[in-house]
Length: 79
Image 1 (tube, rainbow, N blue to C red):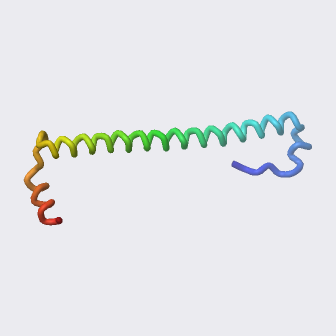
Image 2: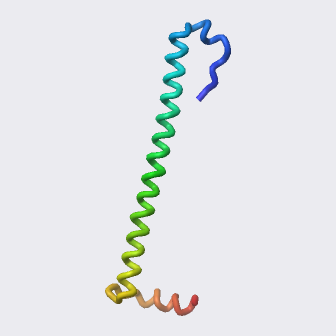
Image 3: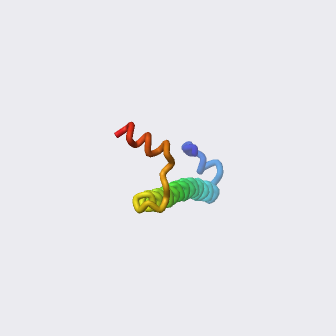
């Protein structure tokens, strides 16, 4: 983005200056919206990953998923 200098309205006319200001605001809002969309998508992916991790943890606790031998050895070593 750039800052409009004094005197632009006199050279281009008030109509063109207002139109340019509208498009500047529109582009800023577009950037904010796209950043917000990316942020919400990242949060959504994190929630899905967390739900999956909880599911796998519960399945392991119930004995429905066997832990690999090296994982159980590492858990014993690093307790």
